[in-house]
Length: 187
Image (cartoon, one colour):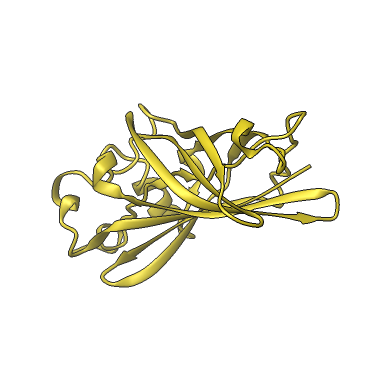
């Protein structure tokens, strides 16, 4: 087994990911420099974190009217960073993200419901590698000065999105479970 095959990423994540959010009277401006989307998975039972470096989000959120909230997030899968150029190149291949055919992963919210002080339940559609599924996850929102901070974790299964095809379907090497953690700062 070669090193590049050993550490072929599996993420998906992304997702995708990815993260989602909520709504306000005017769309919020996302601070990409302070926002992060990280996919965490296990390879040979060892946790691996990989960051998506290019995200684009459109968020409308008003804590007084969360049900009117909307969010859409696009993630450039070619920005997936495992910390090693060889691995980053490998995950762009057809077996993993197939970035040439599917350059973006996306999330579009369908509902945001209050679930307690600063807590929300978000549902929507996640699309990775051309496959769209319904997803839901908890979200927390807090104020940080003039900014709002949206934090959450979206659990997904990589094989649902055909991330890790062929020999990489074996979950003994790369686990099926992936957590997409997001921290979005917006004003």
